[in-house]
Image (cartoon, rainbow, N blue to C red; front, side, top):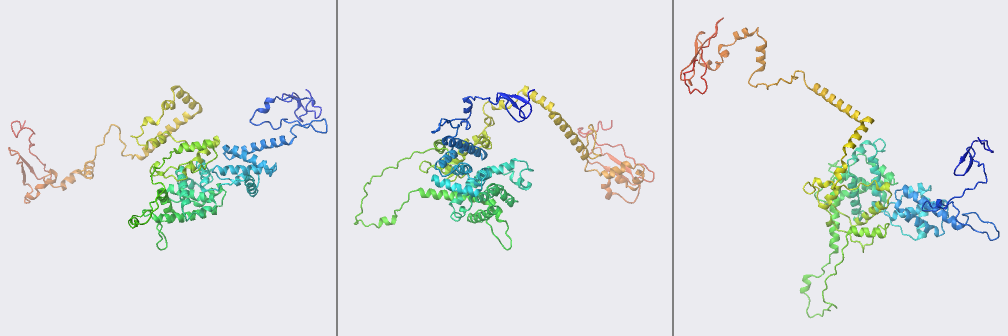
Length: 633
């Protein structure tokens, strides 16, 4: 075996170097070996290979050639492509891969101003440009997260952001609380989908949030923010940190879905504050201020219970009343705002009927230039979905279309109970753009509507008479869901090989055994009878205790009969008042008035050792019409 001349290690053949190479030190056996690369290898990706020679420059004063890539143009181009790759990695990390072209464009424009250098400063500029792209797309800028990704301080990143805005002459739109709702929703869904042990919150809080509808809570929060934007008393409070306002609004919306306050307000406030990089105290302060404002709104609605403190303690807490009445008061405020806007759009009639009668006809009234009344020109109506799609195709990153080209649909076109804010078109366009421009991993987290939901929206209801059961499946969908017999056999065999089928059968047998044992324990011993024996219901006319004593004590029967009266034995105690008490041997005669034969029954009172004799008498047989022909047979 060949040994290395440098270190004496083993030498093996390397296909890439086309030479023998030492496995210890990497020395080539043939140091003059040259490898010629194919030009097709340099065009594998959308960008050129930055390390390939692409420029040759001849020096002026000599005959030598400069090394490849040493010119200024090549260096700038390589650095630009490297920073584009870095920006693309940032967008993938933040799940906003659709914003990478806009961020790269802003970065190129910023570097052309000659105000920023390559290196660490260029990475900071890339983070600032991505923050601008996020703000333009209606998302929070996430400066602290961006500073962590570019390995710079947030103060340095903010200064660089100001410099980039000044250099490019860009007016950045201000943050609004609605931009943080998507972030809060995604964080909360990630908590509820993870196990309780690793979610990071208390079990009681997780149990309270799990059954709630997060999507409905987000819609309530959007309506809440829209109502706050039109409220005069809260217009100044919205200038506070929008992230803290969004956290407080989202917490109150979740309480409105539960119709009761959350038990661990401090824990959920701390979690939301950490996800939006704000202080917990700021969220609690905004929550208290919004609770006070909602309680004032509730007092304006007559059919809602208002907060009244009588004496030392109120009957119901303020948080409970706000949670119960938040949805109603938001719908009420939104309806008032919609009516006010509708009235403001109507033409005002400034002519007073009383003033017309007082006009002096002698006065010269200037006649208008054109007295002909022309009909109002009809404007072309555009469908909101078509308008939104048109603006998205023209400029996907423009989420604020001009008011002249966009007609906001009124609340009358939506189903009853669903109120859309005036800026709902802008918010919906932002959500659509974010969904279409996001990465696949982010898009998979959205839940598509089911077929029942789509049919209920189209037909205006989800009852059985509106949507039939056969319509819940598309044509051929039910046959696709069902497994073929061959698939069933293969699946059953796989389960048997994996031991799943044996475990199911064992669990079923154990469950049947436990059920039988539990039933045997629950059944008393004296109630267990054979299957052939049918237990009759107990009679209510017989004294069972006396009957049992009579049947189970045959030795004491004679003594009991001695103590009993003769009439009680014969069942003739009803004639006790008619009996003569003088003699013990008196004869008792009972006459049956219903019998024409005048049958008699004779009995004698028993003496000591005497027998009781009953004459041969029996009642007449039924159906003989009182005939005595066959009476004694």
